[in-house]
Length: 146
Image (cartoon, rainbow, N blue to C red; front, side):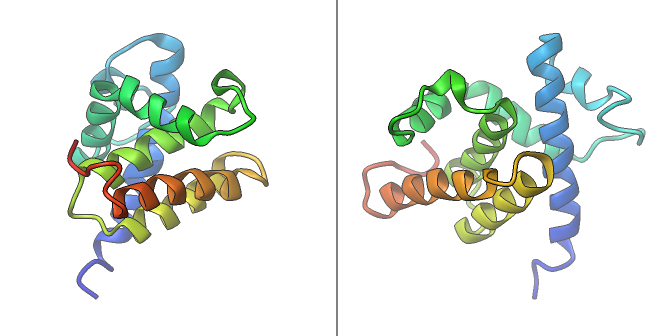
């Protein structure tokens, strides 16, 4: 029950981080600039959690993309929908670097965000990739807080 009040706030932060990551892809701007873009945020101060997600996502982008590549069999990385790639990066940040979020919450939230912002198949796709990475974490092949 302790997480209930934070969940809606974090969901909004995740969605804002996704919109900001999208802006960052096209405008090649910083997380701070993207979080203040009027298409991303109509508030004066973006949630710190959104900034934290974006910061880690950019810092570890190559590593995160390599993880995604390792889990997409029979599919070329550049053919993955951009929104799905962004959702996966942000969720992998939570899964690997944020120990205050239970892995199942991260995976479920990513699935819900994918269903809302991407295609009908995206929820299953995101779930498959994140489950595969989490399985590697459990088995010790990938380390959290890498």
